[in-house]
Length: 263
Image (tube, rainbow, N blue to C red; front, top):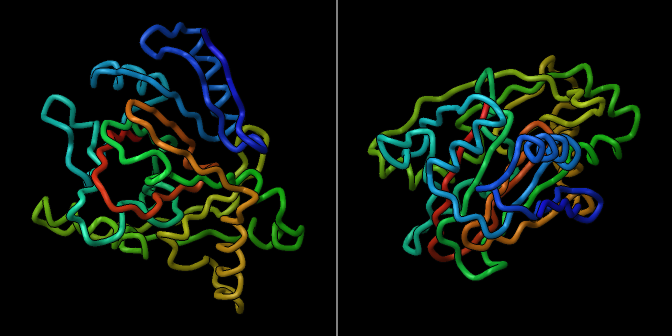
């Protein structure tokens, strides 16, 4: 069985299938759906680490992520995103962002596979379609943003959510910075590529940088562009970092996710 079920306003979609038995044709359908919807999720997937990696490799070269621990020496490309009941700070990723935009070649895709989750609805991941966000911008703002790049830093506002995990590694990661165009054209559509959690400034600077920044950030995450994904055990999600913002929601409890990023 293979079925695609779009979410409201096509902000992501569920795909019903068994990822252990997918065909090359199924992979093609998944890639087309990812281009269209920006985020896909698959329930009830009992994947071993080797099968998880095998599926991920269909989408490109697996990326390194030095800010989290690898699952093991055998599986260094799978990183562990863990929230402990005793953690006092915010959850990892608890602010709207796009992954690793502070690098010169950010990962196109991110995957999460849930291994341990709290009660359904208590630790959602929220997604914002940047296709829709761009579509609903006033024309004069579109014109202005197409001329601008953003400067991003790994020490941006969202960096506070990595502190617990950095303590476990016994070190603080050095700052990374990058520059990227605010508006991108992908798959014949325009998208806003701007990460509020990592943003430092526009380039070139304008007289109204702060005003434009706050307008853009508020617009990007409007409720009408959002979908809140409820996690269950053994659920996999993949999204395109260039077309979706995402954030973890606050919760108290234990959660373990296995994460893969793809160039």
